Length: 238
Length: 238
Ligand SMILES: Nc1ncnc2c1ncn2[C@@H]1O[C@H](COP(=O)(O)OP(=O)(O)O)[C@@H](O)[C@H]1O
Ligand SMILES: Nc1ncnc2c1ncn2[C@@H]1O[C@H](COP(=O)(O)OP(=O)(O)O)[C@@H](O)[C@H]1O
Ligand SMILES: [Mg+2]
Ligand SMILES: [Mg+2]
Image (cartoon, rainbow over all chains, first blue to last red; front, side):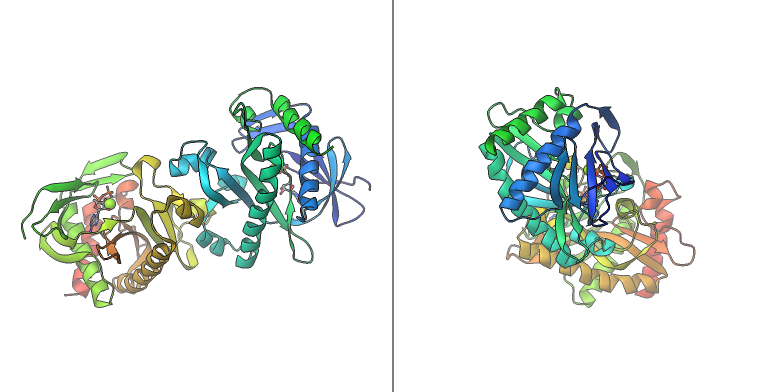
């Protein structure tokens, strides 16, 4: 599969065309951003780590019967994925209160929720990725009510698979952000990435944050903690 | 009915006990506040205006078969209401995009929505009255899912009654904030007030704002525009 022209560059990845119009070449970048792009840094090795972690997690989901856009890892920082039409929603699954949920509801950070929840945010940098209710979704028509329902169900299923995997490597999956897309045949497919950039992962022994909050809150070396996640996952699935 | 001890003082009203434990004495204050209490001013006459406008609107709702806590107007700035246990939700009905909805969804102010919507905000000054989704409501358990459903249905019914009334006095009901409470028998009842403090009302001819935005955005005399609403309503229902 050959890397064609650059189709799109986001904050964390570049998407390239291939000779197959249904397949994209994804290159994971070494840049870290937070607060809607306000904080930004180049961090050598980050792209490789997220590429490898995402590869492991999408492979595990596949084994548990959950499809994604992932096709195969191609190099240290590259993978092939199925092209989809991304639905502009940040689909957040939460098991434990942290970040904006803790602030919104006045819950202490670390409070385990009575059940996992899904929140939908409008993926729109200019609007600051606002939270959406069902009423807003009906106005925006970003997806049909059935598609929204499917997305929420799939998000909870993905959480059910990943929670115990992280538990086995001594980590609690606090929350994660997923993205879904539509295939040409109209199916809803998990896309984008699942990595410490897009999850909150807390070490069960030390309670240390092993995710992008290390970067957001200047808590230490991002690659050191992403390396911990990769090596523990690698140890589990070798 | 005698005015007993002060039970509670809010930003716009005082609640007093009466000799009947199921009935409260409400006194409308002359203070105007905005931005969660950051902007504050005494405006002589405001309490009288809101008391009278709320009285007319609750009476009209009653005529259209919609009950509320309202019992009767007692004086220029006082009314008797049925005591309820307020459900801490700000129930916002919107017909036209304005304020936070326009910002959230990137809609131009003044865009008529394809259909009226209801938004629920957590009535909690310390948290800044955050927007809630169904998932948040399930975590907070402020009301049962059936009660939430009832509240949303009633809010839309109230909107269906008030929209044409305002249309007849040459005003568009852009949006409004309602509060509901629970009676001792567990029924959901419309409570609080419906006034230019809690509605956005735009004049159909001049497009002028005839509501609290005049105070929020320093657009002129608050009592002048509340007076317009009262006198037009008074003219309609004399
Ligand atoms: N399978 C896919 N097909 C098409 N676009 C995708 C796919 N997977 C992810 N994307 C999109 O790739 C873009 C680049 O990713 P990223 O750098 O993370 O962007 P962002 O700055 O929006 O977070 C994003 O817009 C993402 O939604
Ligand atoms: N029928 C009622 N029974 C009990 N409380 C009520 C009733 N109607 C309104 N309230 C409450 O009265 C309080 C005072 O009103 P207000 O001054 O508008 O308060 P706020 O500062 O919260 O807006 C509010 O907490 C409101 O929810
Ligand atoms: Mg991204
Ligand atoms: Mg009030």
